[in-house]
Figure 1: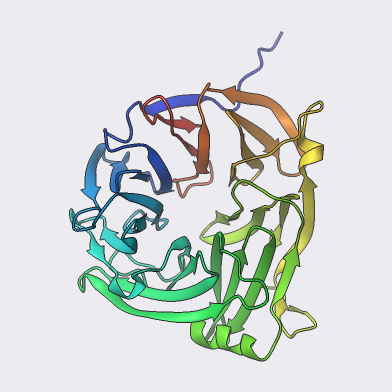
Figure 2: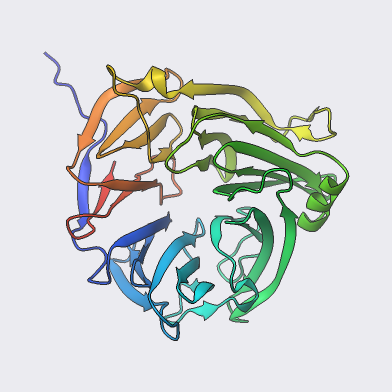
Length: 358
């Protein structure tokens, strides 16, 4: 008789991941680097590639209590952006992997950043190049920071949601070279909408073109604890996307060689779109209500209360693997760039334990 092998397992990485700086409020991961934000305004950086960690205090000089609202890190683990909120308003900081002190991005003062999209094709260890930020008040900004300058080169307001001003909760960006020009493809999500923006030239020219034409969007009903947007990257190119929406997981393939024209003049790069409803993934009378999601080449990993559930992407059904750690899960991330990836799970109880599933 052949013994069944467990495809996924859970390992404890750090038992007291917040290091006494309050509760973990947010997390980001890239290339074996994990960044945790805490309720007392600290960033804890873990580099599991070299086996070290250090703490950064973002609350210095701020009046009243401060909490890290969001933290972001690029796929290479070099560039970090973090937004701190509190009684004195919102501040956003940039931290390079080589630094021990953060730099405040003064042009973003008062703006609550919810999501960041990195330009994977052009980013380097020394420069973020152009990146886009999505905010709580429905704005998209462009930003660039060079490590040697220690401050933002520029901040540009690119676009603002008009008809329904909602918080932007997810952004993804992909680029391709076409006849010597850069073509941008951008996805943005709110709690109920997925919007797409496409065009060539600069980011500013792409978004300015939507002053005179409608934005292509998909709207889905329902509420979700945390609307998320993910691209799965294979050989430095996004190949499929998944949106954690209130109605289910809206997903599809991405083909940047296709040029199917939409009625508003946009080029459509999305193929084989489908909605995987939570009813199909629920067991018994209990309806699935995931709080976070990670995407591999073949799986969706969903956080459902205190359980992690693994869904086969193409079969649209759960593997019989559920991990009950008797903790409150909040987020899932894939920090590695390789194809066989290990999502790190952040928990916020019992000392803010940090676990990995692989």
